[in-house]
Length: 292
Image 1 (tube, one colour):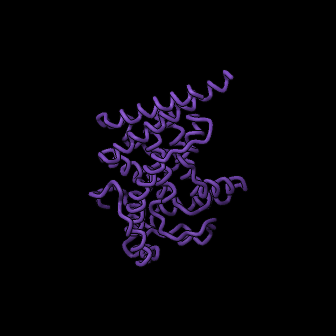
Image 2 (cartoon, helix red, strand yellow):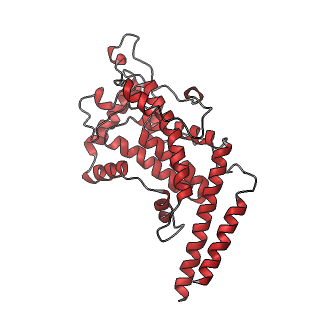
Image 3 (cartoon, one colour):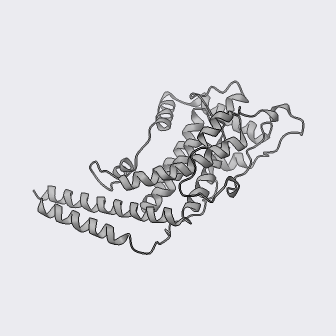
């Protein structure tokens, strides 16, 4: 027990010292990987309206000014000097476009072939939030329950940035949900906001990109989970594939902006130290339990 306490004191001392070191921007890849799979296939279709007088192209998701004012009242934590025009997203395909029709057909295909397990797992993925501590256990960074107040604070702060710009983009584009264009689509979740970009998918990729900064050797694992979230939202019929791809683009741009923010980099360094402390302490306790 004395050895464990001594190790903890050493690690905490190391943690305090390392906070004074110069900040180093992480060297993990920050460029967006190429589009692939059905996102690439559908994205190659014409996104323009079939003509300049298609009535369907006038359809937008209802705008609630009171709700918009409420959700935009909470300002960004880190990216205070960034505005919505600093993000570069492609415009969503027009409602009458060949791309949108193909995306609707894709969703109808998923709907026709989705199994009970597909539905269950997709709804579960959409409703369950994994904390940083949960993620650490999944990748084997620690084997028992841990408390990560510094990490939780960082992700809470990032959420303030993500929420503000995500809602701003949704209100900007006002894209209708798939069921509003094709009544044969039976979405399995009530949609209270516009479609573009997807909130669930945006957060999945933001978390994946930040976790990759903390555990770069698991980058493929984190991206796989984000990709799975995107597909889950399509399986239950609430998002077009182009919503998912826009979310991936948006998330990459937002995290890249965070990586240029000194306050975020300082907080990220504190999180790295917290992960290192917990990993080493858990390893020591595991070794000690095996020797007893």
